Image 1 (spheres, helix red, strand yellow):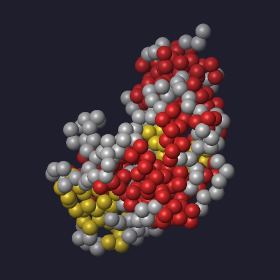
Image 2 (image 1 turned 60 degrees about the vertical axis):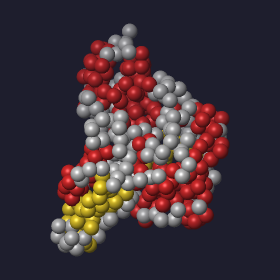
Image 3 (image 1 turned 180 degrees about the horizontal axis):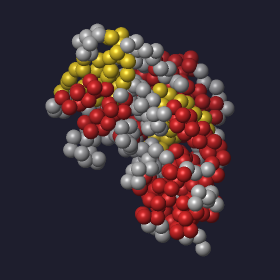
Length: 420
């Protein structure tokens, strides 16, 4: 009989776990036969010694098999999925899915809420008045048939074992273990049953893995383990050493997505979106070029696609004009002349996470808190020039100080590319 003690002892000795042993851990997480103490010990051992490719694959498959699987491609046909490892001012999902759908590449995404300094796509979409994001399999297929796109929050039946392990990772300081990250992401992504998945893996200080080598390892692991589990995948490495778009904030980022799809898009953001769409299309045997995206943007089809999807999800009439910003404004200016030499993107993300939850209540979010980011790394600035503008409910000084400290004026630098 495989017991928690035997498995943990094997890991302590540095030995590789068998398939049955990995599946026993996951079964114990799902049915409660492994206590939190046992699971915490497993997570710590996995984080400290790592997991092999085979162990990571089996962990992924076991967590996948612990819950529902939708197999969308089996019944609907070719459909792509897109996942970001999280960033600041990252509106790519809100833009890429309507663009893919408008170009004839159906796309579906089960999304989540914010984690740490990173804004969640679900939180952003819930700034749309009236929108409902709960999805089940039949509703997802209905949305794909009507609009070619579906975004929402999955039912509780998907990867229940991962939910328990995920809840323990923060308490055990194992959030940044790459094998555990890969297993957690893929167990939920594969449950959707898409034809292929494209991953937007963020690098730079605003990503969850600031070290470029860790970023490459994560990207490689996501693609290889996904393929080993039977789903082709590709990765884009994108820069998160500064906010990706012009805005940070839930309602503001939805507004930016609408502006982008209406033809007013930031060039760096377009570069990332184009790379995501190109790789996603290729996974289902299609080619998509920048000019294809520009054409559907110019036609207005992609913007209308996002509006129609939101309307079908319960958005109130006229919601595009109801994405308000908080009423109190504050300006961050350059303290000296020079160049924007560095941005502490993670600091900005953490400051906004706090500002959006003024009562420290994770169930309440002020969607109207926002920042407009007016400069870019490497750009020359003059003393007193506006670098950013904040929109808050009340005293903005704490947030203003945090953002000012995160924007460093110094010597000229070569700005990093948007796609690494």
